[in-house]
Structures are given as C-alpha cells and as structure tokens.
Image 1 (tube, helix red, strand yellow):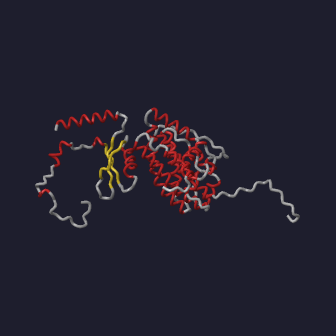
Image 2 (cartoon, rainbow over the protein chains, first blue to last red):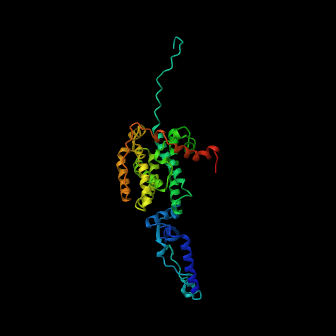
Length: 113
Length: 270
C-alpha cells in the first residue's frame, strides 16, 4: 500500500511541474438534468474564480441543453478515496445477501430511486 | 412631344427611391451580428485557454444564429427572393449595414473583450426595447436574441473586471482598447432617416433615449474595473458610417474570407 501512495505523490508532483504555475485552478463540474434528479459529475475545467467556473461550465458542459442546474466545486475541496482503499472500502459483501434491499418492492409513483 | 422633338434629358437627378426602411433596419441588426460573429470566430483554436476558446466560439455561434434570423426576415421584407445566405454571401462591402465597431480587426484579447462588452450592452438595451416592437416578427426575434445577449454581457463584463483590475499589463491593454474603441460607439446611437421612420411606426427603438441606459451600464463596469471612460468624440452631423455602407478597409478582407466558399461553389450543400 505504501508504495502506491508514494507513487501517487510522485505522479502528482510530476504533473504539477509539467503544468507549471500558469495554469488556473481546476474545478469539478456537476450538472442536474431535471428537477429532483441528482447533480452528477460531468467533468472538470480551469477557472480563476467561482463565477468564471460557472460560465465556463455553462459553455463546456451545458450549452447543448439538457441541464437545468450547475454546481462547480474547487477540485481541492474534494477528498477522494485512494485506490489503496478499494479492498476495505468497497468490498460489497456479496456473500451477505441481507445487506441488499432487493426483498422490497419499490411502490409505484416513487421516482428517482 | 406633339412636334416630334424629344424632351431634353433632365439635369435634375431622379429622386432616389425611398429606402425600404424595415428592410434596411433588419439588415443593420443582422449585419452587426454576422460581422461580429465572424470576427469572434477568428479566435477559434487561438483562445488564451481552452475554456475561453470554447466560450468565444459559443458567442460567435449565437451571433451567427441571430444574424440568420434577422437576415431571413430582412429578405422577406425586401421581397426580392433573397434569403439569409444570399444576403450574407452575395453582397459587397458597400451593401453591408453593420456599424464600424464590429468590423475592426480583432486585435489582442483585451481589444476583443472590450469591443464585445460595448456591443453586448448595446445589444441588451436595444433588443430589450425591440422585444416590445409593434412588428411581431421583429419582436419575437429580438426576444429570442435577448436571452443570449444577457449571457454574453455577463461573460464580457466579467472579463472587463478581470482585465481592468488584473495585472498592470492587462489594465494597460484594456484601457488602450477602450480608448481606441470609444470613438466608434457614437455611431451606435446616431439615428438617421431609417431609425426615425421605424420609430414612428412603433417598430424601431429610440436610440437617443437608450444611450443613457447603455452608458450607465458601461460606466458602472468600467469604473469597477478601475478603468476610465474615454471622453466622447463629437460626431459630425453628416458623418457617414457603416449604416450607410461607408466601411473601413477591414470589412472587405473579412468578407473575402467569409464569402469565398459560397461564391466559389454557388448552391453547394453539405
């Protein structure tokens, strides 16, 4: 595990040195397609501030329609799990059937589930 | 004539036929957008960063779409069977009715943004008034274009703030652009016979009444951008500009590039 983490740091450093410091900060963009639907990650972009990030997100991810709401988040504000966590975090426990809610019927009329 | 002698030709030139004011008016609206859209499109692939490249191209495409609507309607009003493509690709520079502001070469990024900002505010105040025009088709096109123009001014206005209140260099370039562009703004608000006739019909806008509205918005952004508004350059009462077909050299070059494909392959389809 340790080696993975070290490699990631090295990669990040390498990427930073390649980009230099003339790149604007990265923002992650989330789009919502209809009322009540979740905001879903659409991609990322560069912008100097939140307003510009919103405008760029509109131009890059929302202009062809199908979007009613946009969120932009500074990429640095996102804490992500690392690939090293895959085992302990995401092992689904497939052998424990009682963990999965497949014994319930979703009532008609309930949307967004 | 009864004595068989032809009457001498009159030395008084025949009066020019009254211009078709609605046609001329729609041409102005369409040509402003066609020419500015073409200018902006020159940034495609050359934007300062990817996102801005896309943003400018999007604005260019919006303007092209607006030009299509205005020119199509102009062709209908002319009644000579010319559609938007005939008007865009088969007129000469002297037949174009765009203001000079939009045809100036794109300059640096600050020049492009400052020009765009001045035009976007002009577009918002005039389209807003035109959306209440007595001409139903014109009002509908204006209302549609207004939505886009409101976004355009948000984009260019935000950039004015960034450039003016940015680095020493961006401030200097933005101020230089404003200074160069300012004298071309008088033309935007100088009504002529066509404007007056359209206003009298209830179809056109009162340019002189809209100017203070335009200037208030421009002044607010320019001041917040720590830039200074240039002094007004008085415009000669008989000045002829783009609205009368008196263009700068720059328009000819722009049209040559824009029209060559349509003229080399008339009627070609994708």
